[in-house]
Amino acid sequence: MSAAELKPAVQEADEWRTAQAQFDEAAELIRLEPWLREVLREVQREFTCTFPVKLDNESIRMFTGYRVQHNINRGPAKGGIRYHPDVSLNEVKALAMWMTWKCAVVNIPFGGAKGGIIVNPRELSLNELEHMTRRFATEISILIGHDRDIPAPDVNTDGQTMAWIMDTLSMHLGYSSPASVTGKPIEVGGSLGRIEATGRGVTITSVAALEHLGRNPHQTRVAVQGFGNVGSISARLLEEAGCTIVAVSEDYGGIHNPLGLSIKRVLEYRAREKTLNGFPGSQPIGNQELLSVDCDLLVPAAIGNQLTSRNARDVKAKLIVEGANGPTTPEADAIFRERGIFLVPDILANAGGVTVSYFEWVQDLQSFFWSEHEVNQKLKAIMTRAFAEVLNTREEKKLDMRMAAYVQAVSRVAAATRERGLYP
Image 1 (tube, rainbow, N blue to C red):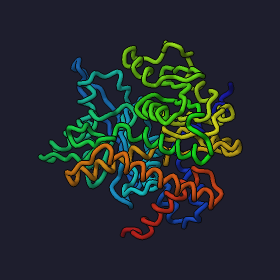
Image 2 (image 1 turned 30 degrees about the horizontal axis):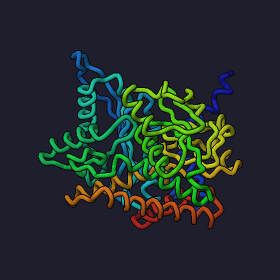
Image 3 (image 1 turned 135 degrees about the horizontal axis):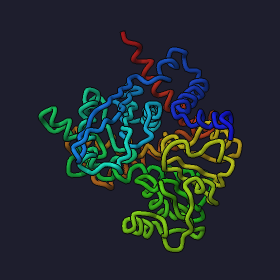
Image 4 (image 1 turned 90 degrees about the vertical axis):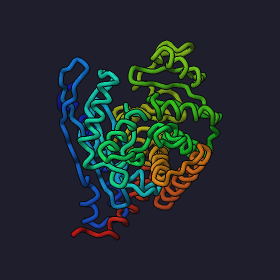
């Protein structure tokens, strides 16, 4: 293949270009004033740091990390921190912008932020991961805090990572500050229901979409790309809702059985074998191959840029619910629109995580905690309302679901920015 043929794919897979293109389309639809377009299509702050960490063998390794805040006009910045070898400033900027819209679409009082470190965490020991995390938390401590910018877990980070960050910030302050991060373990101020929240939100919106399309969950075959926190919980909860899970995959490939997989057994097998490969009664399937498997509902819950112009015509599902952030490029979106595929966008579908992060923050600030049942009820109420609002905008304005969600979100952020005005 020639360099000229490769070039569009490289361009297509740029998350920041995707995020700005989606914003531009929404801004045009709502006839946003030129000055607001200028303000909202850029991030407010981008912070890059390069810092040393002493490894177990006493050698020093340098790491590069980022923290970006897109917009804080509706409240403190909110967004995860990811550890991945492919983290880039453009990716983090796009994720921060998407967080702004995500918070606005479910109408919670946060702005968007995101962070990341360029690292393969599998190459580090637990001790080295802790040292790297604490040093990064110190570097970005000038930006983060319970009333300014509240981190959360993301790709390859978890409750333990958040506990280290919270403890580091607390040591700087001289007192415990549990509300400075969310997604923490329950023992240090975490919320019940937080670990399942993103997957539960994906399930709530999937079931709402199936109902809108007149489909019965019991007659719905599902393929889930990405079997981490979001994908595995989405698969389990969709199975509980009556769906048949026919394929799941992770970094190193996946498994397929057209008659259905028992997610409980798959999870037990992976916990024991540390892989999905060889699961009894299944055929191996590649991560990309899974996207075009014969199914009714496709849940891309891995990383960004999975659905592109190269594979969008091969997708057999009639419903796509985005568990991951930015899994679909604008080119693939156009193909899905043309093919009549109903797509629930990331800023709505996976907003369950930030919604329960908001609940956790509120609980920490008031030192008053809710039961898991209360958390799940409140989450269902917010996600169901947001889905109905976006669906209503879609039908009123004759848009697809992504643009309907964007119109809703950008309108809310623009209204806050307009009311506050420009300083000075």
